[in-house]
Image (cartoon, rainbow, N blue to C red; front, side):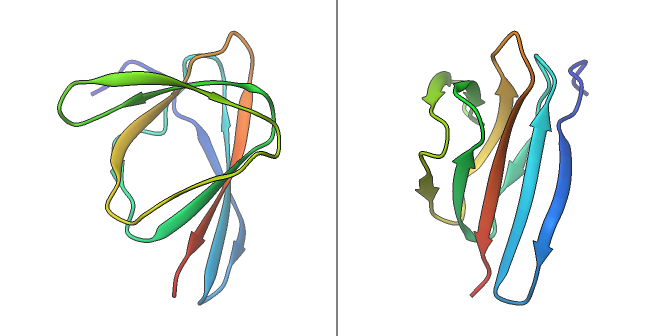
Length: 97
């Protein structure tokens, strides 16, 4: 079990075709390990860095920019950690169909 604080997930929209969740992280907080069941889009709400940990033990830091979305396919497995010295947040939009 991780000693890191957990990110706060707030569901903004939950419909049969789309789910929107806001993730808010204190410095060093994490999502916890998860696998995405759907294609998804992430929209950062701030500029900052996230540490992405992979199941094989590798990791990398990614730079995100306010309102600059990126997309990923279903099946991605990872743990996401706020690598900033400040609170960070993004919207995750799951495409359920």
